[in-house]
Image (cartoon, rainbow, N blue to C red):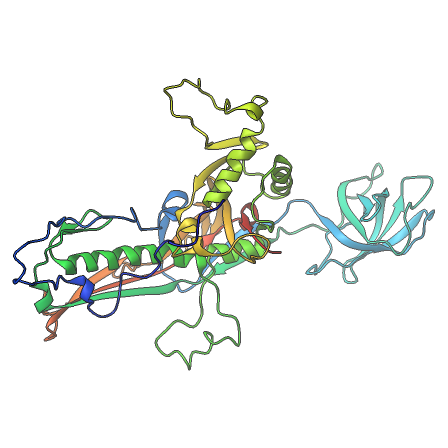
Length: 473
């Protein structure tokens, strides 16, 4: 059996750009001698409807006074090339190795160093001594330590890494030196706006229903509810824009500023975009076994090896993790005995887990944004789905980067928001009232307009330590 599709959850928005008949009581039939028995207070049938909280849990906000945020991230300490070929054939005592790796402008191999050379397909390997290097051509000559000579052929794709050096007594030092290489990343803030407007007459209209919102505001004035919901919606957009934002590709409709004179034409790099582009992606939906997580852990070993990580997941992924951990209990097959508690008959059985350790510490947290049907919770899942996100692994703690504004190294959370600000203008969260109603005296418009604005972007530092869980390759 399954949950029937009808009746389902309502997706019809309650917010409109025009006054609705449902916003005001119109049933004033005084010919009816019987008054209805009504509940004055509005019933909150959807609970807390906001989806923001993710960035508040894992990140921080800090000011910036530039249109471009740039930072440098460390490269690898050791050198390895994975697309090399040898001029020698099996049995040769020496050979010339050519490095064909992309984006390599000058190979970091020097004469006198010792290298490990391995066939990518078979694992056959040699250890050799570098005798000369041609940086311009990306080649180096090597002689092998093994008496049997080269173990692979001249057509194989090889991996090469440096493990040391060897020099004779009384010789000169190493020829040449290596320069540290950083990777430079950047992001651009976007301007997010919203507005709520109400006429002065409607502000003086009392309602019969006591309304309330998630931030605790209550009253019998309907416009207060609409203004508060606009504010909550804007606050949600401040977070979801940082999650979903993408840069405008060259030639796209957004990039053509002539078509959009008042709207943005550049975009920004949101969290999902960055992790999907230069992070780690699990393309099979939800990992459901320890062997699946072992594959993820193996990838994390090759990245930053951050000790503590938080999994922000949708409901199905959360249950899959609970089931996976429950199966590790040898007594779980015949009952529900797992958990660090006594299964007293008067005790509510806890069938969930908050985290586990396997190589690293993993903490689990439900992400409302991925469950909400008006957001990503309504996207298809399963084999037929492509791109539906089910979770995100975020490393805990902070990392050290070179901040170009400060001009020095600084500790920064892996995820944090930069907003535009200076001594005279703070654009983190601006709100102002215009018109001639509601206390405003800025124009002759018989209305109150509440304006909202923010200019911000998210910085995803060390994206190689994040894992995005989604469907589709």
